[in-house]
Length: 88
Image (cartoon, rainbow, N blue to C red; front, top):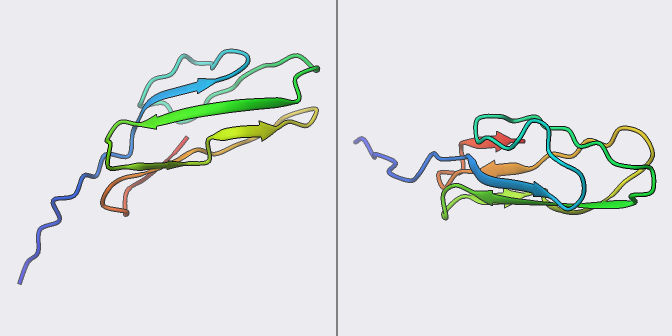
């Protein structure tokens, strides 16, 4: 018996924004790494991400507390099928 999984495999984001600074490079669904340079006075940043597919889920976005130096955050988009995961 073969069961075909018709659930979406789309794990792309349609938008990714930050509350301060500018994403470099400019958001593109095929790009998975970005940087943002901020002044030393910024203590928090909010990332907002939207899945390309309404049935996919996004985790890891929201408000983040910053420390001086390099801060690394991951945003994960999980496709409806639960097997396909995109990390940004």
